[in-house]
Amino acid sequence: MAIKTAPLTATQIKNAKTIDKELSLTDGGGLVMLIKPSGVKTWQLRYYKPGTSKRTTLTLGNYPALSLADARECREQIEIRELKKRLQRVWGSPQQL
Image (cartoon, rainbow, N blue to C red):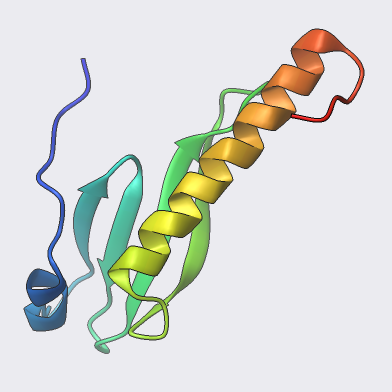
């Protein structure tokens, strides 16, 4: 069973710092903020690729250029895109979904 995590807040992200190693803050649904010792905050999406079922990490962008709301929107768009790919494989021919 999946572990439920509390969604991140803008204040948590803004105040998050690390000193000597990378820090990961999870928002849920595979969305992760990776904070490096240099202070760079990067959004990543960790998900299983349909078809191969292999774990994949996709870098979405850096904070604050990509806000929390924008990162969540990207996650939703990627989930929709992957679902469409999966449906096209099941139904055979490309369809307008």
